[in-house]
Image (cartoon, rainbow, N blue to C red):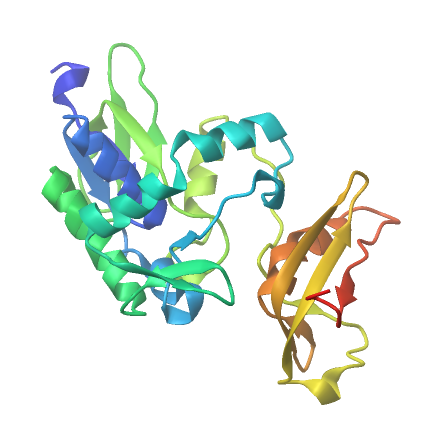
Length: 278
């Protein structure tokens, strides 16, 4: 059997994996989408407070964080223009999007994240991908001696593959399947990996001096000064019992968390409470 006869195996039926399966199948290749949970896309279901913020209403390269080339980031953002992405979701996936003016994000008009998850999985099937749920991939064996990729499946026979896409998520929400299993498989293949740290996370205060304000929400600008420039986010800010949350805090949180890994360095985070319309 030649590579052309073997499937492209996509491990993980979340947003990234399902999109990979859609485009692999559309290219005419046999495609197998393997997911260990019973339904897939569980982080989609909890994103945006259960509503799923699908797309931004505008793309500005300076708002995206990368430790690699800024030029590469720009090229990636330009490779699939925002309007084409919106047409894909509305025409192909079948989910009409609506703008939320206060956040500048596009949500499904139904405000149901499930519509996005179900629409993506259905499009994968319509595109020709075979989906297999409740199946746990435990390892990968690279091609050797004329043998193709081997996808090792718990309690079942190995699956031969022409290529493998690992889209198992990181470490963010283990209950959804993102527990690091895929990262361990990739390390076993000899790939190097960047150190992981939390992002899009609330920040805690020690001591939590503003705990009496817990539950109060307001519109602010949050800025994290950098060696060159700064990262700024405008929008909602929420006082919590342990610290601070809200979209603006989540947007800059990765910088604060990362700085705790660097001895002698702490990332300042500044909040502008007034004059946002000035």
